Length: 150
Image (cartoon, rainbow, N blue to C red; front, side, top):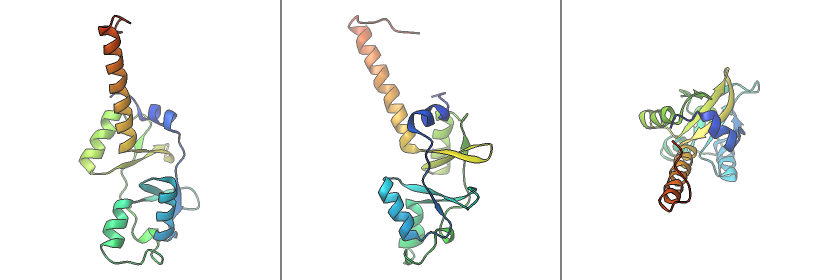
């Protein structure tokens, strides 16, 4: 669990799906559906991070209020109080942020520039892989196939 997020990003990739602040909610949701993701980062033309637009924003700020997604711009409903992290943040620290802040996505910054995004699903996938590998090693040890590395 002391694995840095840079390790997850090296496996997952650093591609980030973004929209501009003037993108309609309807178009942003189409992008999210196209890529099967729960959030997009909102960037300005200078590639600066302005906010994040998530499924939760759609539910609480569009659907619940009866706003028209075709005419509502992302900038009026995105989350602007961002919680970000760095490549050096550990999986354990990221898990704490997800739980304590009740969020599901963490933009990863490198010297103030977006260099990736980590989701709670990415963390869960990493933890599952570790547990499966551990179980495999223990079964092999029990069957005398290999010795446990300490």
